[in-house]
Amino acid sequence: MKDESDKRLDELLSAVRAQKPDTSRLEYGFETRLMARLREEGSAAKPWHAFAWRLSPVFAGIVVALGIWTYCSPRDPEMDAAAVTASDEAQMVEYLTGNGI
Amino acid sequence: MTDEELIRSALNGGDASFAELVQRHKGKIFGMAARFVSDAHQLDDIAQEIFIRAWRNLAKFRADAPFEHWLSRIATRACYDFLRGKQRRGNLVPLDDQRDSEIPAEADSSSAADAREILVHAMQKLSPEERLVITLTELEEKSVREVAALTGWSESNVKVRAFRARQTLKKILEPTYER
Image (cartoon, rainbow over all chains, first blue to last red; front, side, top):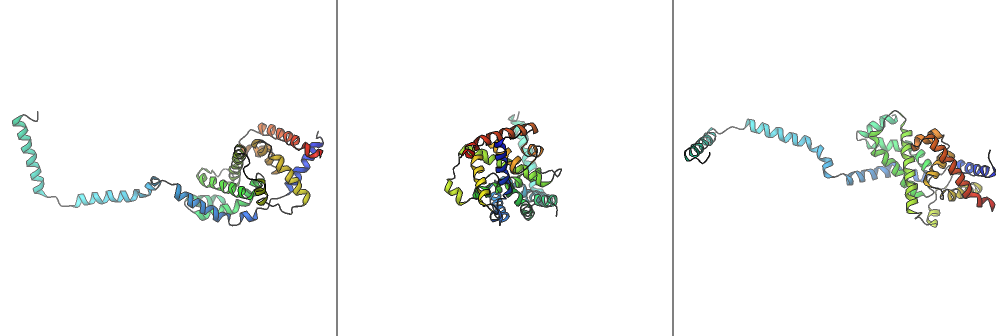
């Protein structure tokens, strides 16, 4: 059962409920302000590594280009022979002197 | 376009789609948040905070309930956080400044304005939980089930808190009636 103070409170709440706050002035251009703030926060708050994934196609491209360049570049047979000879000589010196053991 | 289509577009980088969502729902959000604050600057801050939280969590939105319900939960949480923060800080805005930037009400009759002022002052003495539950049940006319969904409290908890908040509010208002 409701007492007198309940009735008074209900009347008060009813009077306030019936009033709709006029927020039209604040709503005007709200989305423009909000989007500007979101863009500002987005560019300021993101650390450099947040953008690193966007660079992954560039890095993939560099790896592919290096692969193609390595595969296609002409090999110098004299340089290969010199490397093999140098390696053989070094092995022989190590065997004869016992340094490699 | 539906809200769900706008959300998908916004998640794919469509800022204009999110702006469209904001435009659709800002009226309801402003109306709801205005029940918790009487200062226009604070209301603008809260409304921005609500939509920023929505933007950050947009990927978590599951279309099993309307976007409006999801946004209302975020708004309730943001308003509750605002009330708790205000309680921690104390009311730092001087009363004169508050009056300068007070949100006007549509067709403010003198008796309705008086009632509003009395209730605003009384509500400031309530705890954040009491204020939240009174605002949602009495001013926003939400059902116990709706309040439970918005706050994450159990339905019985909502009932108990609403009852206690009413008792406290009646006690606070007693001297006003005696005048």
